[in-house]
Image (cartoon, rainbow, N blue to C red; front, side, top):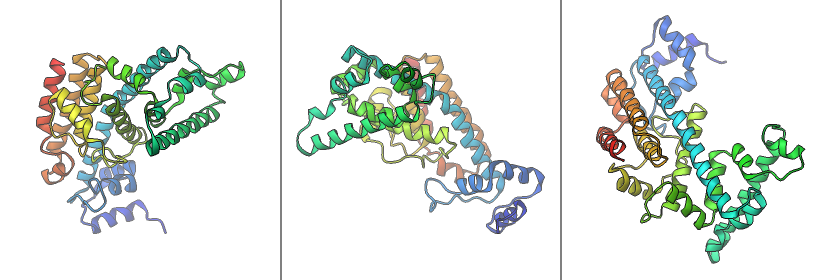
Length: 320
């Protein structure tokens, strides 16, 4: 028998979480028992339980998470758009054509750089991409504004129209299959370093952003970076250290994603003011919830290294 809201409040009290009054009852109803309490009672993994004693702490964690997502979302979307545009420009220049078939033959040829097992894996990756592209076209052919327009006119669907319906995961697969000369053109346009395999690091960055974007867009918990589908290549931390002076990045803390986004904002020539406002926005959120949450809870979410990272990041944003 499903529990009523009153029953869930009683269950929380039985679990050692003090909750009472109409205001907290309404808050529980608004955030949901399963999305709220169940989602915020641990950090990272279910076995790492937070020492919660009052429902106000659950509510603070929820508000903390929502504010971070509100800060992140427009910047992640902006970076996704920029990366797609930089890539689109490089591909069109490489092929001299907007037709996907020409791009497939001319630019999506990374597999040719390998031999043996690596060649077979890269070839398989390219074929999976083809399947993803065909599926995107099929699923979006009823969209009269983009894919459907070219279908109805019996014209080849241009790459820019395909990019319009690509997820960040699709885009990451597309970038990974590009010939290195095209990838090099993109990272040079972004003024990324030439000594750290930036072509590969940009791929790692795209997939790291994909996990974050999915969590933000679908209201997943982001504070404890549980959204990561896998480890981010250590080369990304090396690149960030060289470029920004921020040390200790390992993407086990949401602060590290703030560092990554600020770095990309500067690479895309967004103004110093925009970057500093983004960093300050995050710092202000941290100040509020540092005051609202007991340290033994806050410190399980935000590492003590966050302050030093943000100090170095502000310096980079001001001088970069």
